[in-house]
Length: 188
Image (cartoon, rainbow, N blue to C red; front, top):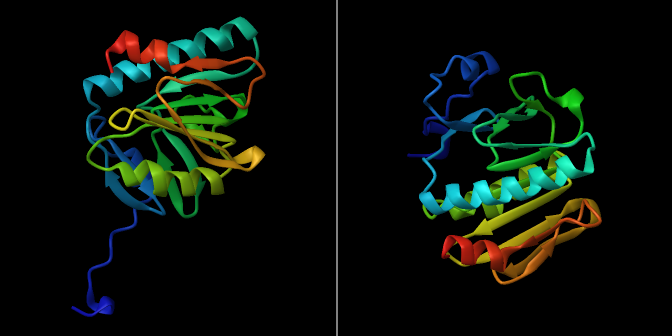
């Protein structure tokens, strides 16, 4: 079938998105719907460990930043409508939070790669996060045992670390993530 005759994906509005059943997890990129699969056990364990480390750090610093975990919507753009559900995010501008979602880019996002669709985190989300103002983006790949760091604010992109590393969160002077401890704790 020639490209002009191929069916075009339906573009979803914010009203349609908000009317979806709560048990349906999707993300929208330029208004096009992409279903999200349920996370694996290792995915959930990594998410819990990392969010706890970040939460405890932020609590100790007593600053304005908060950590959130999926499922929590982030509306990156109204036109075209782009809504994502990062695995972990740090939001420092409380004005972006409306009680339902974050409106605008979080400061820091961590995605944990799902085996079924790794290109989503490495390519699509890296593109959108960079272009919509995320300051720092980490991709954690439990299968490869790597952490890829994109510090867009400092123009440091695609730096890859093995799981036995201690990795500094670039947005903070003294937040270090000890991946060897995490991987030992979780038997990764």
